[in-house]
Length: 121
Image (cartoon, rainbow, N blue to C red; front, side, top):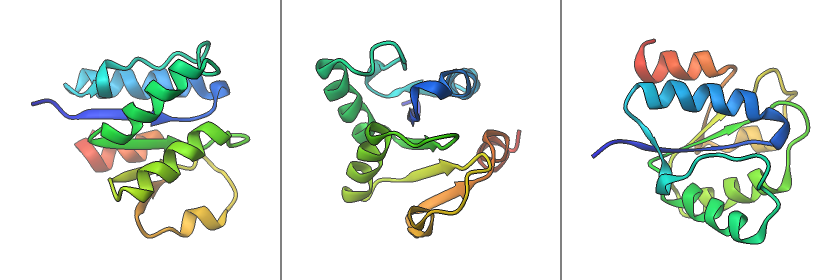
C-alpha cells in the first residue's frame, strides 16, 4: 500500500503545497483519502470536515509555515497531535514559536530539507 500524506498550510502557500505534493506523488505517495488540496474551497464547511478527516488518517502529516499561520491548519495540527500520529513541520524561516518546542513534531527549515531526510533526494 502506498504512503498517504496530508499537507496543512495557509491558502497563501498554495504554490508551495502544490510543489511539495507533486514531488511526493512523483515518489509514489498519494493524498490521504483521495484528497487534492484546493485553496479555493478551504472555507466550505463540508470541505473543512473532509480536510480534518484527511489530516487525521494520513500516514504523514506535513505543516508548512510561511507567513501568518491559519486557524484551520493549526486545528488540524492539534487534532493530529492529540491522536499521537506522526507530524512533520517546515518552518521556511518563521520565527520561533512555543509550538515549535513540541517534541512530537520533527521540524525542517525547507521542503528540500524534508525531501532529503525522507528520500535522500
